[in-house]
Length: 371
Image (cartoon, rainbow, N blue to C red; front, side, top):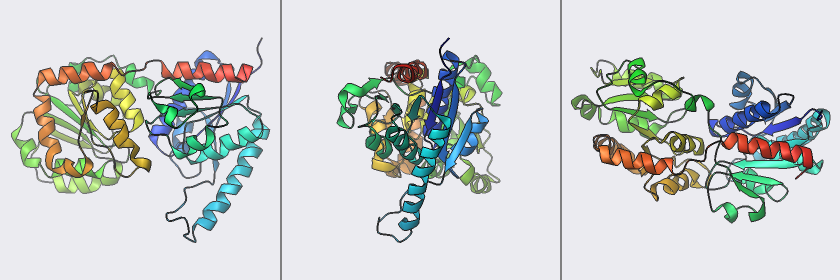
């Protein structure tokens, strides 16, 4: 009988970090139901709610990002919190006694995996983006394995440690059994008409929202149906701006809980270019127009989008150009069956299935053998 497996999983800040982290944990539990898994996150960030909702215990560190420019006086407090987080992380690890620590990027992972490295606990990092994040770049030299979603990552990491696994995605998206017709009907739409899904992440995307609001006349004239996730932050204002507008083919909602049904219903998706979203489009073969957010570190969403657009596996629209051009491009594309088909076929070629299971096996191997 093998001894109980103890695993630390750390990272977060955005859904793009949390979904892969939870997927890896779920895959470890499927392979080793005896495993004990503890998450370490950043206090006040999304993971402190999302991880317990997925059934796992999480401890929060007071870690946060530095203000720009670095000489701002407020950074004194940030630095003190960082040192405190490193100390707390080491204390947590000594109490939990993990066999392995997994980092998925984000503030907390730098402290948690840094502590694991100093205690001689083997570490594995998972990088979702085509441009490596700061935390993972800092942790790479001491990591035993580095699981990536894109080719060419030896620009950032030691080549001999890299494993091309893809990004783990939300399992529910792959398990949807609805037909397209059932999914469209479930949204209150007509299955004989084309449907476009607009998503800007759980918080919403101002540019995508403005691209819709500036072209309500165009939406009114078309038969195409629009399911629009505005994000919680923008929803009340958008409801106000849509008041008294008769648009039966436009359905705005702050959040879509069943993304599996929404993706199945959509003939075309408009989305930001976060790594997790892109992995989902690849696995389900969904034609997509990507509008990368310019407000992310190292402009990595643009790099993610171009990795697909350069293979004719997605369409790419610059954030600054979207309000003027996005909606008309979407209507032209959704009406072009041959274009939809080629985008779907090309994006499917980039899919890397079973990512969570492949990473989980590496985690277990590291825990058992240290390499």
